[in-house]
Image (cartoon, rainbow over all chains, first blue to last red; front, side, top):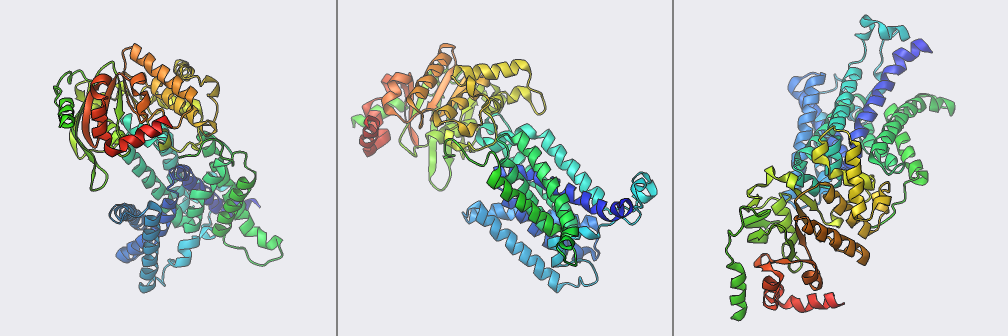
Length: 307
Length: 265
């Protein structure tokens, strides 16, 4: 168990957990700001950004692609704002228009460009390649302390880890302004808080998490993790501090349970092949949300209407 | 003819009277959300130590005036001074109570957390809430009669209780100038009494209170000064000077009859 687990399962499992938490954390705030679709939008527009980066550099390497994805995310946020203001369309519709159009553009670009030689296709964009992120040098638990072996670790793992550290740092440092401006933007502004900048930095952090996670686990997990764990967590508690904790727990549970079920579930049911881990992780997060909606202690909204 | 004369009198008050020391003064303030301005070229000088009602018909720009004066919405033009200095330098002297309906009361937080938001300028980014600050917050809840609700989730309160929590948060700011946007909108009679009692306490302590107010019938009882607005300034002065039938007629036009009826009913 030890040897196989460390080389085959530990890296994808950790990457899945880190990605899930990195997306769920900003998701809490996006959800409360009624901007949950932003995560959806970003994870879709990453595709044209990555394809363009590939066309420019001619190689599948991490940094140009991350930059391309980041640029695409930025263009999206700007486009959404422009369409919203010029077209006087409600924000949800503006997001819907932009991200579907950009994703479709990405698919067309991908089809027209010669990417057959590299691992870049629509399927990869949706499901990622979690199962293939294995650590061949990981020959048992002892390898975790072996520097030479650690060098062979999939680069997605440290990248996702540092992304998670960055996201945690952002939320820890800006906890108070984030909470204040999410609850009562007008009041926050009278305190002198730069609420526009705070909102923008939240979107940038969410985009960073989405782009990093997309590379490793695909857009399905990103979309699910931005919404499902925070939404389920909201039904477990009436305090934001605890909601964050619950969302981290649910994200971790989704990643672990989803990964295990994808690998062994079909076998247990008498099937032959494992199913997509990304798909199963997203499914589990949806099931958790369903259970929380049916049985969570704070699913009833009491008191006065929001107005 | 008389009408216009009376209106002119209101407008022709010496404009710079007390401006330097005024807690809040705006000059030539114009705000627009679309093509039509919500507030057009308004001058206002709110008097220190007074309780002023901002009064006018629906859509007359009452809230907009307040929000622009506070920098919540960006004016097209105009200048705002607070105690004779730019607003940005005086934020610690201002407390603000937004319209209750402007926030989502389902937000996962407790009453005491909302009141502690009023202490943000003391707490800063990472400062821990010290025992003394918690005492301050609880004392503010006490003043509005909400201390026993400190641990409740804010969505579990009635509209009037939510309004009191907002007032407690403003009290926690420990300011000199209190700006309130429709503090009596949709609250029960007991809450209205509790709020006005607190506001009168503030006045007695020498603080300045400015409130957007929609109930004409209570203006003389609650306030000592009135600022009448209908996109442009109509009148400004003591209740006796500014809250006259002629000014009201100018501000409300044909709608005054309706306004009075809704007050009576």
